[in-house]
Length: 620
Ligand SMILES: [Zn+2]
Image (cartoon, rainbow, N blue to C red; front, side, top):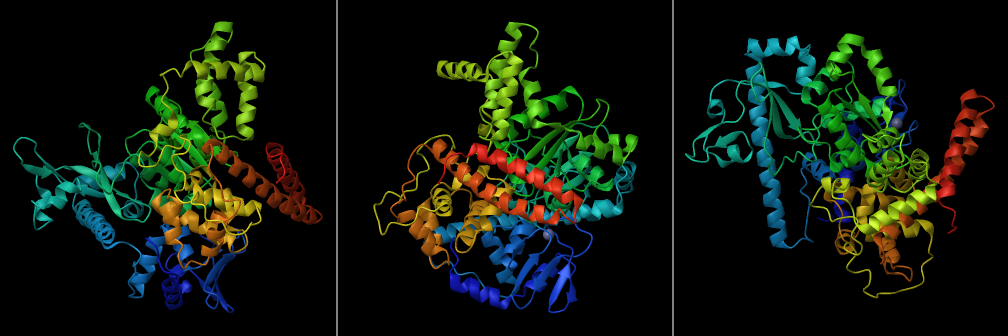
C-alpha cells in the first residue's frame, strides 16, 4: 500500500511530535525544546531533545533522530503504514489508498479487519483472565510462590483461566461465535462438534506482538498436571515460528542493557523481569528459528541465549546455533549461556544472586566457540579419523556463515584442529560439496519463514522491470547509488544487514539516507518486495527521482548470481563503514589529550577498520 506524499505532509502538519513522543518518554521543557532520557540508549542525564518547531527528535548521545512517524517505527516497533495509520487515527484523518485496485483494497481491508477482530477477541478474554486472577486465591498464591509481584504480573498482563469447560460462555455473548474457535480460545470437538474452553485452571500469559496487540496465550498449570504448558494454536495472527514471548514488554530494557536474553519459557521471562533482568524473551514451545533471530536483530545487535543445563537444553541450544549461524555477521554478537544442570535462570538467580548471573552472561560462550565444539562433538580429535569426522561436521556449520572476518578466522581455527592447511580443508570441503550434501543436517535457513523467497536460489528474485531497457543518461556509478540499486532490486538482502549497517545507510545525506530508511521500513513491514511494487509505492515520494535514476540508468543492471551480488553489497557496506570509522578515529584521537579512554577507543576503531579494509581490497 502506498501513501501519497501530500497526505503524509498533511498528517505531519497536524500532529505534534512532542505529544507523540511524550506518550512514551517523560519530557521536560528546556528553552525552545523538550528534553528527556533517550529511549534508544541507556543514560542517566537527558540528551534526548524534541523540537516542536522542527517537529523532530534528536539524541545527542546516540544520534538517533526523526519525525513522529520515525519515532513510532523505532520505538514502538511499528511498520511504516501502521505508524501512519496510528497517527492518522489520532487526528481523525483516514489514510487514502487510491493506488490499490479495489479488489485488493477490499481483500486487504477484510484481512486487517479480521486480524483486528481476532486480537480484540483475545484481548477481551485476557481482560477477563486478569479479573479472574484477582478472584482466585489459589492462582495468586501460585504466582507469589514463584516470587512474582503484583507490579510484574500487571506489566505482563498475567491472568487466570478458571476451572470449568465453558467459562468463556460467561464472557462472550455468543459462545458459538466462530471468532472464539478461530482465535484458539475454544476447541470444537472433531466427532461431536461440542465446544469447550481450551484453557482451564491455568495461569495465563498473554502473548503480544511488537505492537502490543494480544495474539495468543500461554497457559501454565498450577500443580503438576500435564501438559505443564499449553499454547494457543497457530492462527492467522499467531505464528510460533516467528513470535517471541515478552518482546513487546522487553524492548526498552533490551536497548538499555544492550542485548536480548533468550530463555526457554514464559515463567523464565517473568521471573527474570522480577529479578531485574527485564530484557528477557522466550520462544513459544518451539525451537529457535532463523526468523526469531532476524526479528530480535531488529532491536539489538547482541543476543545471549540461556539454556537449562540438561540434555534437552543442550539440544535446544544446538538448534539455536543452527538458526543463528547465517546471521552471525561481524558486527553482531551471539552467545550461549549454559546453566548448571540443576538450574533454570530463575532458580540460578535465587541461589547465586543477580550479579553472579550477570557475570555468567558476560562469560557466556561465543557462537564461534560453540560452533567449534559442535563440530567436534563425539569426535576423538586424538586420531586422524576423529579429526576427519570433525572436519566433515564443520563444513555444514561453517558454510552458512556470512562472509567476513569471523568466517575467515574460523576457517583457520577449524583447519588447525583438523591438522590441515586452511586451503586443504577448503579443498576437502569443496570435494564433499560436489559429491553431494549428507542429508544429516538440515540447512538452518530452511527453518525460517517459508513465505519469503529462498535466498540461495539465484535469479528468482530479480526485479521484473530492471531489464525493461528504459535507459536515460549515464548516472554516476557512486558507491551509495549502487547500494541503493542493490537493495531496490534485491530487497531480501536486508535480511542479513545489521543494526549498524541500517543506521549507516539511513545516515547518508538526502535523498539517499531517506531512501534507505524507506526501503528498510517497507521491508520491516512487508518483507521483500519486487522493484515493480516498490516503484509504485514510491510515486510522489521525495526519493522517487533517486530510485528511478539508479534503477534505470546505464549502470542499472543487477542481474547475476545473487550470492555474488550479496557479496558486492557487503563489500560496499564494509567500505562505507570503514570510512565512518576513519572519521570516528580522528574524533577519538582529538579527544585523547583530555580523555584517557579515547586512546583505547581509537585503537579499537582502528583495528576494526583495518579488519574491514582487508575484506574489501578492491577500489570502487
Ligand atoms: Zn540516545
